[in-house]
Image 1 (spheres, one colour):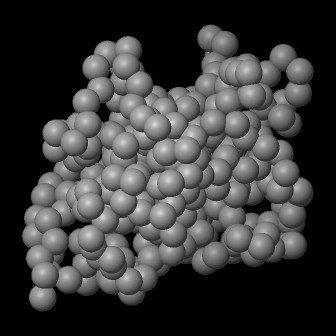
Image 2 (cartoon, one colour; image 1 turned 180 degrees about the vertical axis):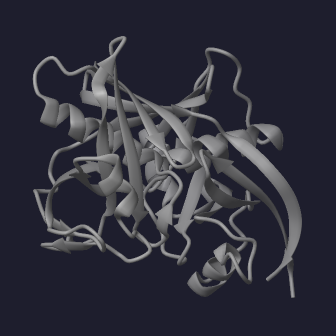
Amino acid sequence: MPELHFTKGQGTGNDFVFFADPDGEIDLTTAQLAAIADRHFGVGGDGVIRAVRSKNLPEGAAALAEDESAEWFMDYHNADGSPSEMCGNGIRVYAKYLIENGLAKLGDGETLAIGTRGGVRDLQRNASGFQVDLGRWSLDGGEPLVRAKNLQVARPGLGITIANPHVVVALSSDDELEAADLSFIPVLDPEPPLGANIEFVVPADPLVKDGIGRIRMRVHERGSGETLSCGTGAAAAALATRYWAGAGAPNQWRVEVPGGSLGVRMWAAEDGEHVSLSGPADLVFEGELTI
């Protein structure tokens, strides 16, 4: 059986198993990927990320067509082995992994372009670790009803796409947020064709302090279950709260998740409004795994 050298990394408690396959020679099955991510019988993680050069896998062709400098592709799979478009926390830790292993360089003020199934994403260093431009977002997921265990009634959600599909639900108090049992998959009505990550949000009191909006969030990620953090979910939660708050709501947000704190910023670009995510990225340990 082949040995796989891996690295475990995390960003605000959202944890991943990384391995390098620059030439795209390692073809793991869905079951093998799920086994690696299994917290009882594998390494354990919210997902598995393969570091592969964009030119060496089919999905990478679109990334290179978008930006020829996107040498590396983040081949991301959820904990159940299913592929996903993007991961806001994962891509920051992925950048750390590439840099620490000498596969990429990123100086202060420089930009690192990384290919994903959701398009090319640009990263820079900042005081908290890394900032990633998540690109344009869209309010195109409707307003499905959301039912979650231990919440008394169904709540309206707001569908937002940031490469990944999200549904954001506003709750009235910290007690409601804590009561929700996200070990059970929340039910969406109607169910989006590709499913969705579901974020439950409570605004701080006051909502805005020193010009920065503040919210708390828990999340159930499709294919992974409840996680300690979701990067694109934090961005979706901030965007939804700004939408609900109306005119005058800020473009900078601090999102508290069970695993830590993330920064979200919105700004106008030539192709529409973009949203960025800032937060820490850490590599935890390395090891060898028999596949």
